[in-house]
Image (cartoon, rainbow, N blue to C red; front, side):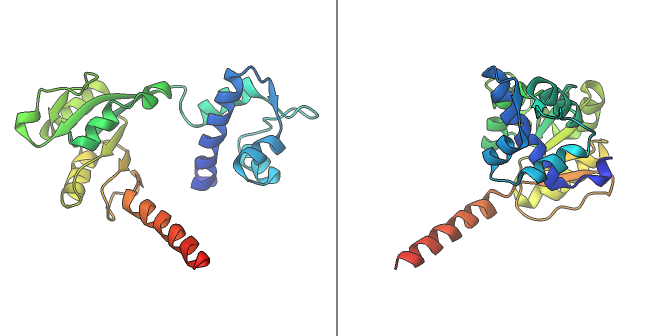
Amino acid sequence: MADQVSEQTTNRLSLYLRFLNDLDTNGVRTVSSKILAAQFGLNAALIRKDLSHFGDLGVRGVGYVVKDLRQRLRRILGLDRRLNVAIIGAGNLGFALADYPGFRQEGFRIVALFDTVRAKVGLSSRLGVRIHDIRDLKRVSRRVGITIAVIAVPTGAAQVVVNTVVDAGIKAVLNFAPGALRVPRDVKLKSVDLTVSLESLSFHLARGEGARA
């Protein structure tokens, strides 16, 4: 099933889940595909198609029961289990990610920081995430069960770090270092390039200014 679902669909499932969380908190019992579509500027047929990959999740004449759909999406996205995350790079970005409370709220537990600077080893982030030597990644990963690694190191060190992560047996990587990284086919890599995102925003600003000139 996972091979038949596009990454765009899984990204949208995450958005649907966030909205369902808000609806559930506000006591809303049911929601239609039209309401979901309006929330995200999508077509209702696309919403129904996304959800139909995982069975008949709606109720005819009612739409979707918020609590039920929320629970199903959490299971589909694997959020019904605890996911242990390690952050590689105990710099400003690494510390900010380690102490971000939103990860814990969604079931992602930041269990360790890693760095190559020996003076940092043994220290902890503000919320108590301990810094380990990167050379101990495999040992710590086996001990605490790290399932996802977040790469927050300079570009020049990123590929070496990813190789270390792969060698430790970690199969999911979120990368914040600019540039393309190479991983084996059985390792899932997602990259977040903040510079590209900012340049995209700059492009749209420039187009707007050009239209007004």
